[in-house]
Amino acid sequence: MALGSVNISDDAMASRRSEHAGHVSEKDASSPPQSGTPPKRLPDSGGRTFETLDAYLEHLRTHAAPIDRPWYREVRPGVYQLETGNFRPLAGGGKPRLFTRAELMRRFGFTR
Image 1 (tube, rainbow, N blue to C red):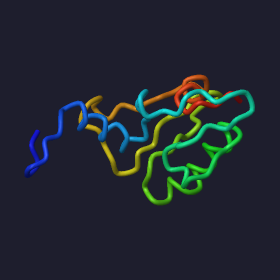
Image 2 (image 1 turned 90 degrees about the vertical axis):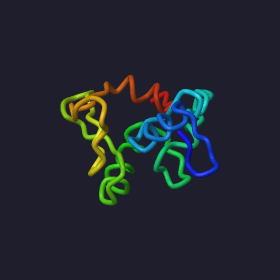
Image 3 (image 1 turned 120 degrees about the horizontal axis):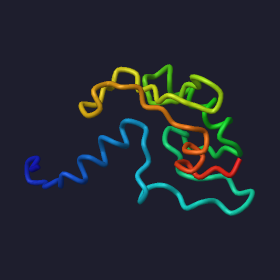
Image 4 (image 1 turned 180 degrees about the horizontal axis):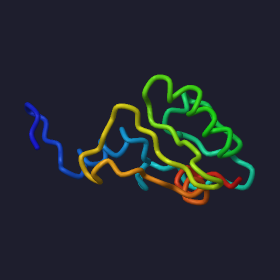
């Protein structure tokens, strides 16, 4: 897709849409942390680091959700739903996007 004199590939556009929806692509995710080292470069972290997934999810709930940024709501023990505020992806038909705790830990690089 061409925007003015800048060419943006379909992959780059998909990556940007995915990042907007609160996803971290494999190439953008920080490498798994060393034991005891908190992950870095988390989406909507405000530059902060978090020792646990729970602390990061709480930060998103209290800081990202009120300003219509992506966050994760626990819908049952160990299962989280991505809440995207007003953003509604065209693909997927608006179905709830569910993630297990283990999936979120891998996605964001937490060990606990």
